[in-house]
Length: 405
Ligand code: HEC
Ligand code: HEC
Ligand code: HEC
Ligand code: HEC
Ligand code: HEC
Ligand code: HEC
Ligand code: HEC
Ligand code: HEC
Ligand code: HEC
Ligand code: HEC
Ligand code: HEC
Image 1 (cartoon, rainbow, N blue to C red):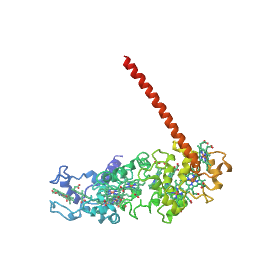
Image 2: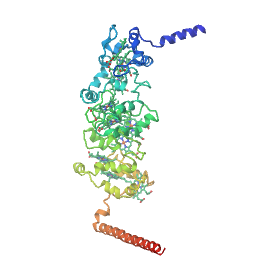
Image 3: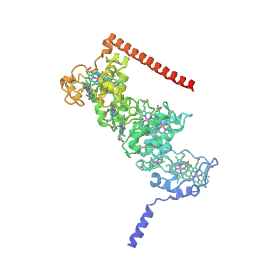
Image 4: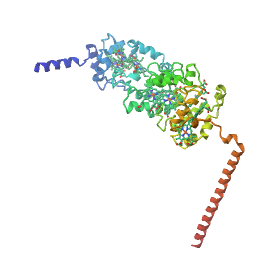
């Protein structure tokens, strides 16, 4: 037993990585916690952190990165050393990074410099699957936000980035601990991040369906089968993509009041296009869809916050929307009993008969409409006069009593 203990202690020692002889040369000075440059930059290297980093564990020596000191023995060395080039060993990452917006920012002299160490660190770099890595999915938002909530101001400002923290995706990471939820890199990439409108950007119109679809596989399939998706696949710029309906950084569950597709807000989302004059002319829509919906029982109740009534999506669906002429469409005459029946149990063919988007009386009977408006104004005027009369009476009584006292 004793022998075993000694043996295992020996193995444990052997497993603890130690500095190589060459690295000891550097640590003679850099082990000193007080070592600083004249400007006060700390030059102290924490042994434990470095030795437990992926490079320390892989036996990469100091001069593996600080390569201008390779073979150097005549210490002290010169004051300024070359910038470390990570690409010497990580050529694929470096190649991708070179074509990114972050690399462009570095080349433009007046901008902030972005380099490998900003996302990975220097002497404490860890494997990307390590809990403590700066690029581990749960830690990544913080790493990006270091710049994007600070010094870097883009078109839509810092608030736009901050919205991410209100999203279901962030909640998934933070609260549910789901590494499969979407962090910044799932949508934007890591080394190959492009300006958002660049055609190769993962969030550009051209690519956004595939980007959300990497995780929401079933929804991508449904979308591409619908009328919007079919046109999207042909390159149309007029149809909605995921972010037109769900927004970008503050995506939440549709059951959340803040969601852009919360039941009572859906009409607004669809009408952005379906009430648009130019689009309707181009595609032969009727722009009366919102109006006819709003005038219907469903629309009126919805305006008052009633969520049980039908909205555009309850009848048309939302991802695989099909024109009513398509027999598979939920609004095809043959399928209406089922569509309405979802909420009106027992709804037969008769129930669903007649136009749903009917032009209301309001427009077809102009005189009746004007008369109604006249009555409404008359009532408001009469009630107002009545209220003024009561107020004057009260004032008069109070005034008289004061005078008597
Ligand atoms: C004799 C002590 C000593 C030894 C040995 C030594 N350094 Fe230094 N090192 C210094 C001092 C002092 C500075 C600060 C120079 C200055 O004033 O800017 C420094 C600065 C540095 C810097 C920062 C340079 C810059 O451009 O800001 C790096 C990197 C560095 N050392 C790496 C190494 C490596 C790698 C080794 C081993 C191969 C090593 N040092 C060995 C004393 C030492
Ligand atoms: C994985 C690559 C890598 C290894 C290995 C490495 N360094 Fe560095 N080191 C860097 C980077 C990156 C910087 C930041 C400056 C730069 O970009 O050139 C840096 C900076 C430094 C500095 C300046 C102070 C600072 O923190 O910015 C010192 C001192 C230093 N290194 C010493 C060492 C010593 C001693 C070792 C070995 C124990 C070592 N380095 C191993 C990448 C490395
Ligand atoms: C904007 C932040 C960012 C910058 C800058 C950055 N990386 Fe990364 N890097 C990441 C993220 C995020 C991951 C994890 C990607 C993943 O999970 O697939 C990663 C992963 C890696 C990996 C391991 C996985 C792989 O792709 O092989 C290496 C190696 C790496 N980076 C090296 C570098 C080097 C070298 C540079 C500089 C040329 C660099 N990184 C610059 C964010 C960055
Ligand atoms: C001398 C070669 C060398 C240099 C220079 C170097 N690395 Fe590495 N790096 C390695 C080796 C070896 C590994 C461990 C094997 C692996 O996982 O690829 C590694 C691993 C990594 C990993 C983890 C890979 C993963 O799968 O998650 C990252 C991240 C990384 N390096 C980033 C950097 C960054 C950033 C720099 C510059 C500051 C740098 N490396 C400089 C050799 C190097
Ligand atoms: C669910 C996907 C998704 C996630 C997660 C995400 N983004 Fe975005 N991001 C987008 C989309 C979509 C746009 C807008 C694209 C457009 O305008 O066409 C965008 C735009 C941006 C922009 C440009 C802002 C501007 O003002 O134009 C920046 C910078 C950005 N995101 C950074 C981040 C950071 C940092 C994180 C993590 C904290 C993050 N994003 C998380 C999808 C995402
Ligand atoms: C060291 C600071 C820094 C870090 C860390 C950083 N960025 Fe950036 N980022 C910038 C700068 C600077 C720009 C602007 C480039 C320009 O103006 O040309 C930029 C631009 C962008 C853009 C393009 C914005 C647009 O308007 O099109 C996106 C998207 C982006 N970053 C996402 C990220 C993500 C995701 C991460 C984390 C993986 C990250 N950034 C980490 C500094 C940083
Ligand atoms: C035309 C607008 C529109 C487009 C485009 C759109 N969605 Fe939706 N999406 C909705 C509506 C409306 C709902 C929810 C309706 C409800 O359940 O009340 C929804 C629900 C969802 C849900 C939650 C599923 C559920 O039933 O709770 C996810 C996830 C989702 N969408 C992802 C996506 C993705 C990914 C894309 C792109 C491939 C996309 N959406 C495109 C309107 C849209
Ligand atoms: C890396 C994978 C991934 C990517 C990329 C992604 N999502 Fe998600 N999304 C998830 C996960 C996982 C959840 C569930 C999170 C939770 O429930 O906490 C989710 C939830 C959602 C929800 C709420 C669903 C519900 O029923 O509550 C919507 C809506 C949504 N995502 C839309 C999008 C859109 C739009 C995009 C593209 C801009 C996108 N997602 C990109 C993984 C992803
Ligand atoms: C970004 C603009 C946009 C948004 C938002 C939008 N649509 Fe569309 N929609 C279009 C365009 C453009 C077409 C025409 C496609 C074609 O005919 O090829 C279309 C076609 C349709 C059609 C088929 C029309 C026909 O006559 O064949 C229906 C039904 C439809 N949309 C319903 C909806 C619903 C319901 C919503 C909301 C959940 C919605 N749309 C949101 C742009 C939009
Ligand atoms: C109660 C169910 C219901 C609601 C709610 C509803 N629709 Fe419709 N919609 C239909 C039916 C049924 C048709 C086909 C018959 C017709 O044109 O009246 C249709 C037709 C359409 C068309 C013509 C294209 C086609 O497929 O024939 C568009 C565009 C449209 N609706 C958009 C909307 C929008 C936008 C909303 C929300 C503001 C909405 N609808 C709300 C049931 C509904
Ligand atoms: C998402 C659920 C839902 C769908 C789908 C739906 N309705 Fe309704 N509808 C309601 C609710 C809730 C009321 C409120 C009164 C009630 O409970 O009957 C209502 C009320 C009505 C009313 C007026 C009140 C009445 O009972 O006479 C009519 C007419 C009506 N719906 C027709 C339709 C038709 C036609 C369809 C199919 C094209 C349809 N509805 C689809 C939920 C729905």
